[in-house]
Length: 332
Ligand SMILES: Nc1ncnc2c1ncn2[C@@H]1O[C@H](COP(=O)(O)OP(=O)(O)O)[C@@H](O)[C@H]1O
Ligand SMILES: [Mg+2]
Image (cartoon, rainbow, N blue to C red; front, top):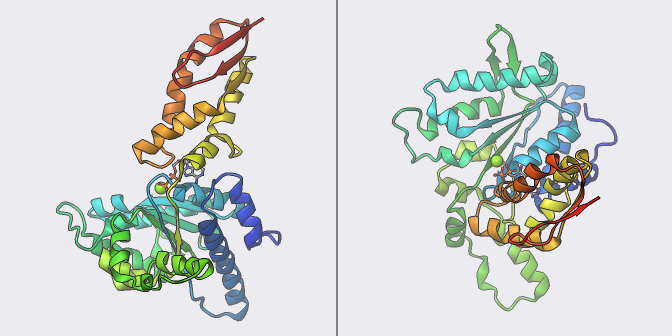
């Protein structure tokens, strides 16, 4: 089902080209999807059911959860769709909505039901389905968890055209920010008392301490059966300023390279000094939306220049030395 060359290391190296940092999460996810597809292959050979391990991604908004999943689906070459848990909670027709998600997966697979039934469904904002957050208009978070549980466990779902799709082998990846989970964890994790430990054991302690336990998720508001279906947890780190700088510059399709291409099409060489990226990162860091505000700030900076350039074919080079200074134009 997966190409032979696709190993966990291959997946991580591909992700590295687009997603900055998040090394632990990349490894966890790469191993999880790799084992998932191996399990399916073995189960087919043995004609036995698989014990599926769906994945939960936990991390602040704008740290790369969705980006990682999208990039993952490209490298795996399997059909992939994303859905928002919040929209499931807002509708009165959860089952229709779930059916629509699976229909989109079938469409992505070029109407090949077989291919779709080993695809990946990413459900974002899963933390918004807290059991306590009763919605008056739509469904309670808890009832949506039950509806999702059914397809995550594996069931036959009837699609619009009267066809059925078996969800047993579909890999579900859920994502959420889980604001407040760290507080719950700091109250329930009791490893911290060993304070005499050396560096090495400190590392192990740190790892234990950052491990989310199923009980933490219950306390947060996920029902036990639901958490039980998400045994693999990948934590996303908050992005540091240097990471924000790297995000604008390094990925294959980085904001910087995209705008350099746009200027190149106008016959102009664009240079943005490192300092500018550091200034943008500083602002974005204050906004606390991860990498989300980077593009907006960058575009605000570049728009006046992009407005000017097409009317001045003599401009050959544009250099931006600071977020607050004038750009230097070199004309022919
Ligand atoms: N770790 C990262 N590496 C590269 N780009 C990132 C990273 N995190 C966020 N971004 C950028 O920010 C945007 C929003 O990130 P997203 O993956 O949607 O965040 P999340 O799903 O965690 O809320 C992405 O489209 C991407 O441009
Ligand atoms: Mg997201």
